[in-house]
Length: 264
Length: 309
Image (cartoon, rainbow over all chains, first blue to last red; front, side, top):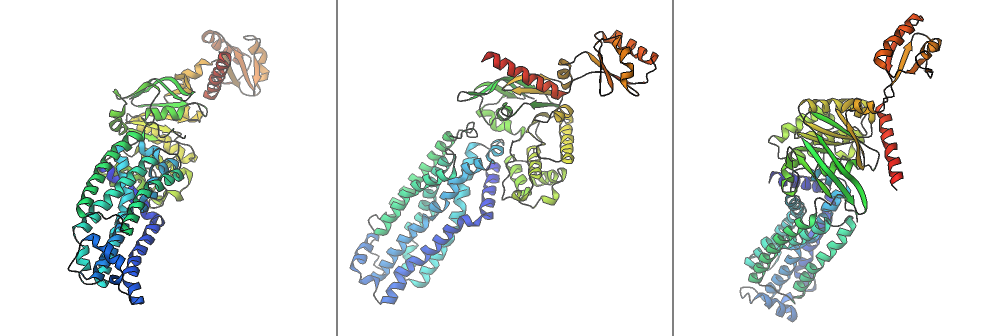
């Protein structure tokens, strides 16, 4: 545990000294903070047309349940904010992908991997520190964004929307689905990073990992896929189990005693 | 103690290291000599458990180095890699502190402070590694390798890129580690360094060509000739020398001759010189430098390879 903590400290220090690497995540956070308010608050205010007047939106927002305590406009606002919440939660996946993809092959190219492997650090400790080192900074940014998101909803949406937002479904999304989805994706990126010889190759594969996640988000936004709180709970459990499995696969595929001399 | 038995490593069809057996005892420094591509770094990496041998074994303090024992055994080894491998964005102190954590040292701060002082790194402690010169980076890597006071040191070119003053202090440190009972294996191109520092020298050219004390290696090429230096020009006494060896010659003002029965002939030769009026300054056997021994071994190996192919 001491060794894992030491390497994790190095990872976090490295990101702190190279903040530009998190700039795209920060920009995305701002965009996803602004965009739903433009859609749900600003445009209706400018055009003078209430969201509740849109029959299509009113119908699709019923996917979340009747929410009889809310007006139709409030329910549509809730629907819009819920959709963008998913985008927020998946930000760590896309944001940390570059960090994770670079994690092992980057050390190898900088010739810092060899002294690292000469220490008593185990492969499991090394890979765990690398995943957490990529996840924690983006998760922290995402969490800060979520707090700001909730505060803005409380201040600008219809009465009752924020209370409806902070239900069990949102908590499962924020505390379970988001982090486990990120863990799985980053673990896959680490596997790739330990098998290739070029960070660019690792990043190209990272795009493939992000693709299914993006598809899920698009399905949510379009309203063609709505997962209930219970379904999300099972999804989080499944993702966590998959992460554990992937961790063992990563250790098996790492090939500690060959990685330094494998350049093809 | 670290020992390798019949250690071999292939990369595809290429044999990098072939059947190397050597041991470094506690309190001993062994220098690993060899040209580029001779397999020095591969041997070092196998000894450190960084790459698996194709065949053969490594034991550390009697324990076989394997996947199951690797983590525990690596904590006994300090390994200086070919490249310093510092994290560029971290400061010198941070680089060392992280490694203190990776070795799970009980008082990391104290250990790091001590290493910074010992290696004279205090002025650079808060400087990022990327901003340092090659020599300083090498020094930090060396401090890192010794941070946990390992009982075995594997050092790949430890004085490469260091100025003479620092090189001397590194030699002093290695000598101290030897006194403390550490087993040290140093790979180097510097024959002078090997001769000064090492108790034994291993000459590697894919396989081990020689492993012995520097003096014993030199003895292999001993010619049986004697060099006599006298005051003034030695040529004046060449005839005296030729009474003992018709082929006696002058080399740089000194008389060079063969005295096959040195114990009997050397005192007689000195007496003859004195009788001829010479002031004898020095009489010594002609001993080849380690460099000559090394080049001779390499040439022998090249000839043997040519014959085989």
